[in-house]
Image 1: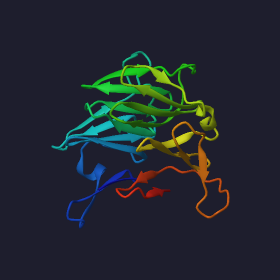
Image 2: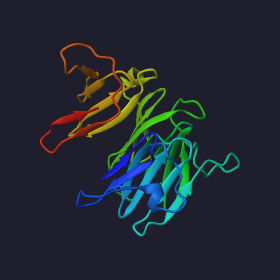
Image 3: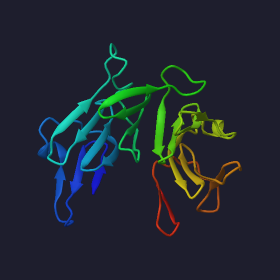
Image 4: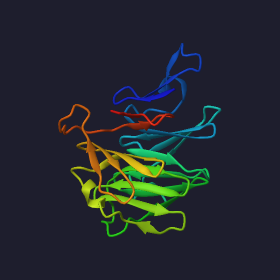
Amino acid sequence: LWVATNKDGAVMLDPQRKAITRLEDSIPGFKSRNILSFAGTGDDVWIGTTGDGLYRVDGAGHLQAWRNDPQDPQSLPGNIVPSISASSDGSLWIATTAGLAHMRAGRIERIALPNSTPAPFIYAVHATGRGVWVGADSGVYYLDADGRWHVPAWSETFKRPNAALRIVPDRGELWIGSQKHLWHVFPGQAPTTIDPEGRPLELAVHGVVVGPNGEVWAG
């Protein structure tokens, strides 16, 4: 189990659930203490940080970093990485506060959003196997496997200050955690808020998980 912390870096609970290890104590060269996101591809663990770019830790404990280089258009768009999602083909979608990136075989391609600013703030990415959902400061978008962008009719519901922080597909539906609410989206319908206490609550929802029996956990 990997855990991201805001001030103490990344920590790992071993498979026996007995020992906790801080990454910076076990991996030479890892210094970032503010962790925003994780993803896994095979034996590799990918770590998105606040200001220190993207790290990969392989199964042997070797560390590799990607950061923004203003002179290199094939570098990471920004060094703050709020969200990472691994695709079924082994590639990686990377949300940064200065744009969207797609990494394949270690090479980064910057992906422009439709009708967006040159360096949009990307809050969330979720690869589906057929494409990727993207939550940006301007709304929610879907990029299909053929490279075509789709803009839902309700996209601008999730403009900042109600940006989508987490997007989770669920059997054709979507669960979206935003800066203000938890939302449920049925196909062809407008998003509706979920108010667990029976009254509107304006709370940021950073995490959403759909369980094996359809239960939804949000925090």
